[in-house]
Image 1 (cartoon, rainbow, N blue to C red):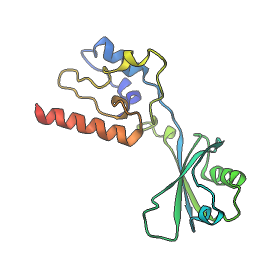
Image 2 (tube, rainbow, N blue to C red; image 1 turned 90 degrees about the vertical axis):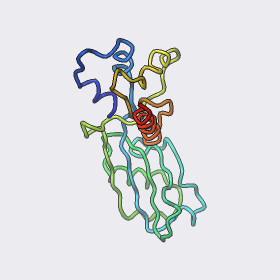
Image 3 (cartoon, rainbow, N blue to C red; image 1 turned 120 degrees about the vertical axis):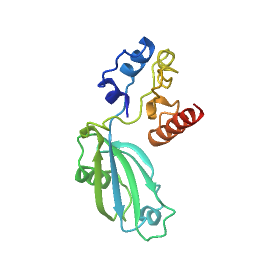
Image 4 (cartoon, rainbow, N blue to C red; image 1 turned 60 degrees about the vertical axis):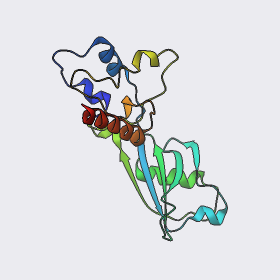
Length: 176
């Protein structure tokens, strides 16, 4: 679970002051994930990289995924602001893309901010001096309670950080 959810769970006795401060002050980015299915890797015909960033809030960053899959189709994945729709993201792509061969056939968007259990995404960068108030308190166990989740790892990238923290906790439990 992320720290926003953890904040809502009462603990008796209360967590130590350092843990409480750290959990209550984790800040997150929240954005939507867009998937654009295309009939082809059209950007290759246009000799344009499919990876770009910052062009439009409805499609802030775009990159190719699953290029190792043997298929004539392709998929682009992107981030977007939370108020964007799949249609908004496709229209943003069409406004910004400077090639001629665009052939997006389907788009979906997952807006994590609408899900009360997974609304937070990656932790944001800490201000100068802020990390020492958070680290290592976020990952330290309290009694028999272990803490896992992307926010408890020093790599703040979503699934990779969550997996590393889960492995850390599993190893500690196994060693106990």
